[in-house]
Length: 487
Image (cartoon, rainbow, N blue to C red; front, side):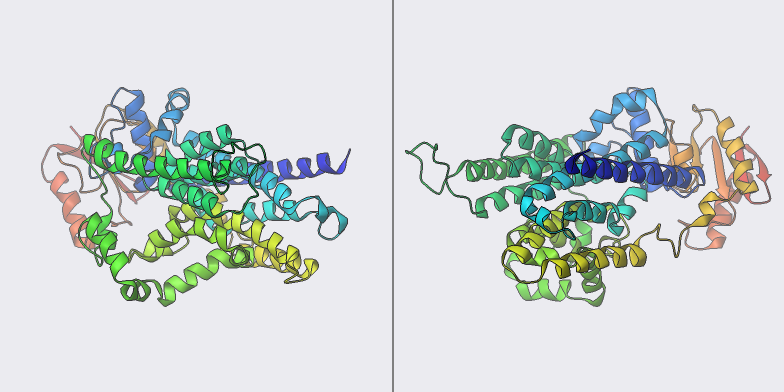
């Protein structure tokens, strides 16, 4: 077996190990009631309703149609699969598979960028494999994978693949993957737009075969970059001005940037015209810590490739200009717009360090390996120090509850705790407790969990209103769960 074939087997072995481990881990989170209505329940019900003929509808979000909240046409590609396997486990598996497969184009990209000269150094010859392993051990990627299901997760492998095909100048394949990346979410197209900007700024010797009537600076890469920018702008306007309003919505998360203004134009204007206020918003202790943990696991290598820092602008702007803490926590789906750019930048940064002799090759690679493991140990939800072993333990209360949940007919309207909703979402009407617009047929409440209520008394009053109506019977399970059923 030659060296290249051995490398590929190692990479596919890493991909397969990631898929098996996180496939089991995410399934156990769902099985043991660790997923939530937002967003596992939302997507489960949305897919189920779509299969039943109620296109992209759910009863958990503030609008009845998900495309009014987020324009994510890539979800339509998963509908046939959900029709065959109508379960949240299907969504979790597909998400994990997509994240794992992102390692392959990253390996191909790093192998191409670092070049064959690395083979001359025994210690350094496996640099592409190390970068690929760093991706699969990257803590923000782990959080993205395990935290329920989100369409934006697919952006990571699609952007990496799109960049790889741009790098090898396969414009058709690059167009396909960038189009799919844009289809993940209405704001994802901004990340695609910055791919186009990167191409405009990338230096390349003009092709000798290029039409002499064209300016020398206008290479095929730059023409493709211009096309990507124009498409991205038109797509974004089309999404927020035509498609999302047609489904009853629009840009609905602007409240997270209300300190800049109340409307999208106001927010953009303030950001552009008040740079000091921008800096004050960005440079807080929490956000600096967040940025450090994003880049430390790749040894801050993107800083050694300034052009690829451009790819981080959309995600950093989105997460650092907000005052919504979850977006700069590093623990949710919000880092999806950054991960591809971080590893592209790390690869190009490593090449620049070596090419320009800023640092010895061995030191650069040793620092990267150390950083990968520090990031994994300190921040990953599946690190060996704080591994959540409770997911692998049996719980008699959960076992009894599962039996009851399986017996509830799909025709019944249900209101339940947020972590129970994903198990009940394959129905037309599902709500979190106290959010139902009409009395539900069945209410399932965990007496130890009053999440969503202002206090325990409000929670108890909510349950008593149903019980005192005389229209319901009730039973308790394991002295913990209350099941209230319409007579």
